[in-house]
Length: 446
Image (cartoon, rainbow, N blue to C red; front, side, top):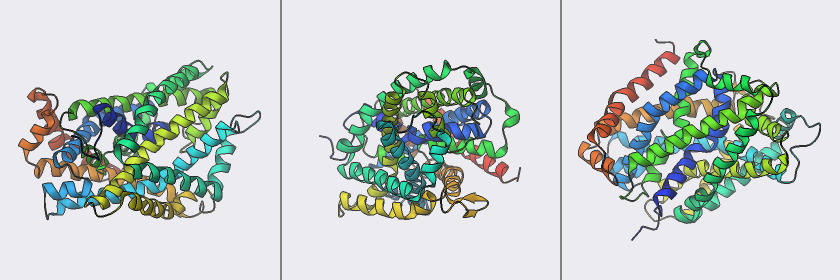
């Protein structure tokens, strides 16, 4: 008999986890970060990091979560009681909180674009798509209301639980998102001048890569797979023993890389065909998408449908961030999931106001010469996520019993020992050394 808070199927778990991983990470953030850091060279480094660092990390979080059956904080306490290692789970909750404070702002932008597109207000003759994005992001009322609405949707779904909330939403929307992405890519590739964008994205030019760009690629591989903050520890704690963790992780990584590839092929051909700059930054997707759909027959309809699916992909990512916070405070069964979800959502909204206003009335407020929004993004994606992954790598190889890990690794589908040994070597040697080297290089130490 299945527990109340458990995935109803392997497919449901994979799609929900893929949704948590894909969302804004692959569709919104990847294109603009790649555009600002060399295009093809960044993409290649991102793939290497995803396969050699991100995939082993994803498997590790799954092993921790399912073996304990506990959410992030309690999982580490169960495996290493009364030790400093339990701080990893707490750091993950704090990291998810900070991430959601600016993630919800972007989610609000997506919500505005979705609603506006449904009413045919985005694609209009003579409209400057860049100016439209600037107006939306600089308006304090539009930003705050849309952020609050986005968080409210999260609260309602998380309050419903795993099967009736997260899983049900992910199961239908993720396949449709893939389909519409393919349509978008086909149209983008048929634009005049599209080949220049394809070359930028798929032809590596390593002269454009810097130490900071490598750190961004590492951070993106973690951000895109939702690892480092123990979100996947919480998700896998609801996973049945009949599911193969390595196979599920491989499927999720494949889907993530595929969507990142599709995002690049959808965005960069349009960037070059319409004379945009690949270094546009966070607004790149919101400027390029309307541009490509405006060139299509029934473009308004396709834009509306795509944005609805994109909104759901964005939501499936934010679900995992709010879920880890709610699960941490409801694990003892003494608190109402609905009440905790509302309290957490309200606190996130208040804390996210400075990031939300960073493109408007707080645009002149900077720290280290960047806005509060960009600073929060950098702190979370490029400092806290890699640090979280480093600590999890050290924890799982130094504190968790190897026989337990091997047993969990082989549940659901027995693999040759080569695969377990390869995963163990990557976590023991490659993951921590790579993270440390990239950090030291970014700081100028090496």
